[in-house]
Image (cartoon, rainbow, N blue to C red; front, top):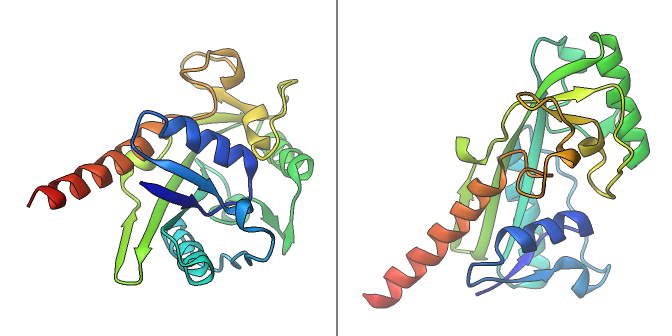
Length: 209
């Protein structure tokens, strides 16, 4: 099954390739269609709304099965003004680059004593065609809780700036220092893998009928 991943972020695309590598899915990069594919405004108030907005926008333009993901970042015990939600990369209307984003959350961690308990909520929307749209924002897509800290790891990965200031709560180590099986997914990859595994199983069951 060929699916277009609706993102221009190469790091996110590479991570998704790894997540589905053992499934019967061939991922196609949105960038392979050129920059004529216009990105969405992401005006929704929650990850599922934004994922759906992006997927429908891309499907209308490329007319191929396409899915998009969206994420909300949340902190425990902070003031509402410091809660990023779905606007994690936008501050005061400005879209932050990687370094600006990392420094912004370092400053918030500083504000609350050097570290924050954080978690991601995630959603997927897959548009197979205009009459076949699959949405998911189940709890299994959410991350485990982790720390955002005010001292960055020396490793900085393009497209994932907050990984450099993310620490595993139980292990007390940066995710970059605890091995490939834990690195960079925060417990999210299993939920995404299950989403696509269920999709393949449904298609197989339908073909057998």
